[in-house]
Image (cartoon, rainbow, N blue to C red; front, side, top):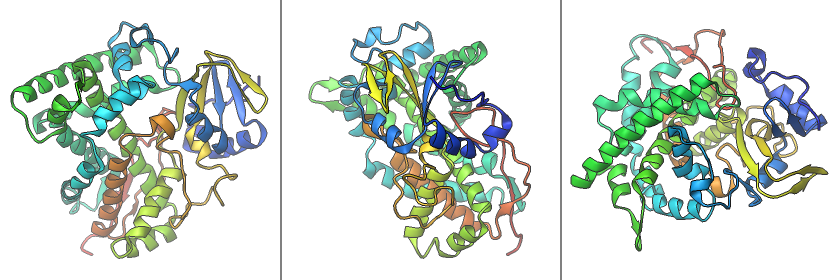
Length: 407
């Protein structure tokens, strides 16, 4: 076993820039074991891409057991695990994803484009005359929350609860959540699940043009979503469709600000060359990955590069490291918005490829284009930036920006 050399994954210096450490790990110790978290860390693209598709691994252990025995956790968060698509394996995963895919379709996502653009414009209009804002708080956070809220059918008066619920729940996906994290997450699951049950009940009586109404009615032959599955799916769509997108927008814009030539090129051509906007967004997702780590259980003994991993071992697949692997990406540490071949792993791969990837891409393209076209001379207002004290979900505490007034 090779320990990860005493690196503190929550050290502010590491959180500010983990990529040099990743490079050293990929070169010297591509598979590391950490006794503190009892996790095997994988750092290279080829290994991680392969493991994401390996059916000998699963999100739950034992992955082949009946659902009720997968996680013996009587808490609300344990209930969420047992009914959430992201935590299931086939055949449960196949069945549930098939049902959800019937209503959360690419066509539906594409139809949201005009409304997402309106939301982005409204957020810019609210601050445009001030010449400055916290891009994270005033734009990147509210945009995906409003989109998900409207998609689900959450009334405007209730949307203020969504961000706190999501924040408290996703804290449990960090490496070492505390008892206080667990308390807050359980409370958030209880409140959010209760809210969605009420919303679903209302939609059964009075259907509307929203996703909750469609999830209530979706059917494949004689199969339907149970109420627990419907509620857990709603929670997943908020958490996965919101937290990662917030940080993807902020992290991506920061990369642009720190690469002024790329920003100038994109600002001048985004509207005329949509292909450049697409490749720029993909590069943002690769370059500074909002979800740094994805965990998997080993379901049966496997051997990888002479390392034997026994059934019951837990793996930590480092997306952030994979996306900077010089063996897969040419000039991997360079921010290249024209990069054509960019098979990043930000949305995962295989069975658990991110359900919300199409929506995240549309939101990011609209967000980046709107910011660059509506706010001339957009730039950092301060170089003194801090990252949140979390590792799995990588994000800034704030992103102060300014722009030219009266231009």
